[in-house]
Length: 125
Image 1: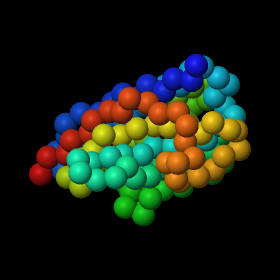
Image 2 (image 1 turned 180 degrees about the vertical axis):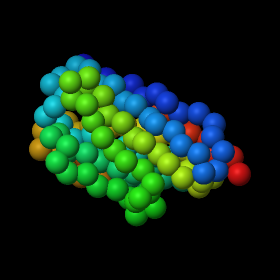
Image 3 (image 1 turned 60 degrees about the vertical axis):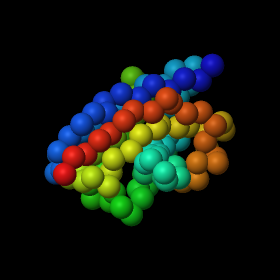
């Protein structure tokens, strides 16, 4: 079965950086988009970034543009989210996700069928 496992979260001060990783298994990962989403306490899950199967396309939520970078290493079945200039509003559980069907390109969580367990990111002021 498809599995996604995130790591790299933690506690960081305002202005600091973290790099999240998501390791995928269970299918030929190179054919699928991967997205990062986040959910803060009391808020709905929101889109952060996505990268296409070939890494030709990337897309970011407005609130992370210029600060976060999504990338992937298909040889390692791993997707990364480099997060710089973090602020307390970035505090959330971060999830990686992948859609059921190859070719799907979406920022909606409804289009993603497989999810990791999440990794906590906490930014202190």
